[in-house]
Length: 218
Image (cartoon, rainbow, N blue to C red; front, side, top):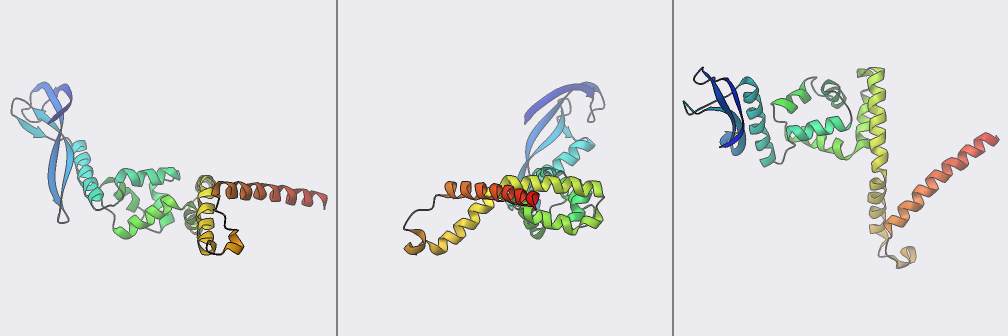
């Protein structure tokens, strides 16, 4: 038992006002036939030597229990799901709409319900692939307000632009893997990814500038 803090209050165990300890204890329980350990929070009465839970503690402990199961089964935890949603700056309801799930699905996953593997895979893909998320967002445009759609679109584009070099690297590696045995094409040289990415970004920026100048001259 680890003491987190002590507060003078009405004890729910003995119904007297005294110093009540908030403690953390390691518990073990079974969820979907899997035995898991998790840290639970309780109020502890030294007089009765009993543990009690407030309504808030019941919710916290239940979520800790479910998250312990998720970790064991290699599923995203509630905190990780919240992190993915907040990365795109989306409300729970709108995130569910974009994914084509029930309106309260994300709310349940973030609070008390364990997601299935199929939904977990989708959330992971959205986390790693903002370009795919952009396609889902555009598909769900009619389900969102114009203000919300614009906000989510700008955020997703910003994330995509921050990761675009990673997409370039993956694409270049895939092509180079097919050509690396052909010395006529590779010149027998090792791939310098950093230099290639710098050249692509340079050409991309300058092509846009040249195109703009041409339009101005027409």
